[in-house]
Image (cartoon, rainbow, N blue to C red; front, top):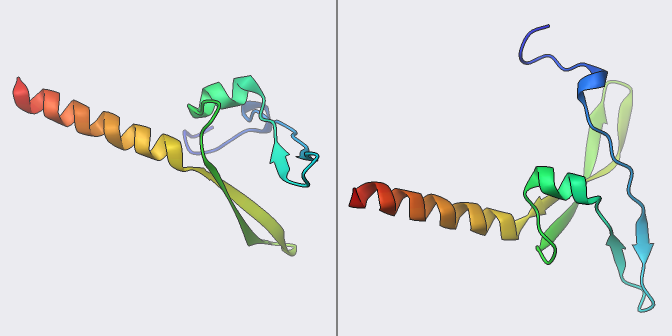
Length: 88
């Protein structure tokens, strides 16, 4: 198997359910193991974007998630690393 090829056994799978609170707001609880692997922490701002997914067998509704909090953390860490390298 090449480095780019994936095997079904190499993929972690998680099932989460969309839930609704008493105010009618929707939310998802992510497994802690998944959050750890993604570098996400409780309180992060997650953006949900609906999209169309095109497969060989047709199109269907889908979504993507992006963590704006982690993007800021990563950018801040990169900035601190760049500054510490310049100072050496």
